[in-house]
Length: 135
Image (cartoon, rainbow, N blue to C red; front, top):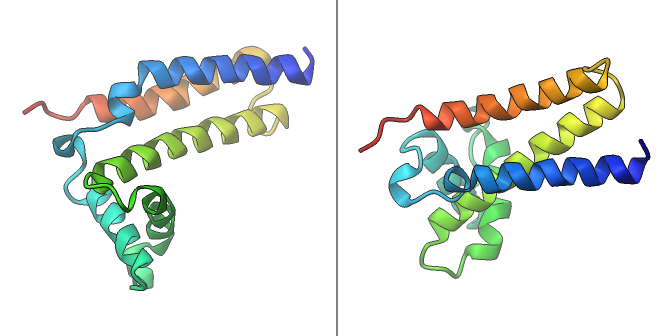
């Protein structure tokens, strides 16, 4: 399989995954985790206001969510939009890292193992969000 066909196949599966996970990727306000995710989004906003977090407050997620806050800072719903953009970018980074690992044969040894590994990784991210209690 050529490099171009491999990228197009991965892009097709990625788009399919985005379409299937769209309700999880675009949360409503009540779907955002009250402590962990909300705290990171808020730390990202305050990092944009020149408030540096301490090292024990996980500054790397604050930097990530500061980058997601920049395009939506003028919106009234910046919190929800920043969270949705962060979830989409994290999913993109997950797929990109799994593809690079599969291409370098670091983790996977065959094409069937690569497909199985990608399905396991993406299903585990969907399972943790699907297990939240409904209100």
